[in-house]
Amino acid sequence: MPLTLVQVDFPHQGPWGAELATAFEGLAQSIAAEPGFLFKYWTESPTEGVAGGIYAFDSRTAAEDYLAMHTARLQGFGVTGIRGLILDVNEALSRVDKAPLL
Image (cartoon, rainbow, N blue to C red):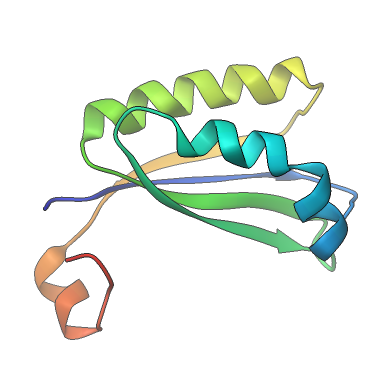
């Protein structure tokens, strides 16, 4: 199955870790229900002051739709400095390096 990844990060001052998990449980549930969504790695770096994630979708169209919606949602929360990328997966090389779901 071809995968398309979305990478998002933005300035964040906390919470982190378990507190972030508690605070964003509802958002995680919402993300899990998005069309074409496969999985997300939630990312955070208190040292760098950024949070975000790596998302996998089953099509580029689903990834593009999600990134547009999620960027608008984050902006609605008052988040600025959002960086979002849509990336194709090179399956041959990813298989060599034991990527899941290929």
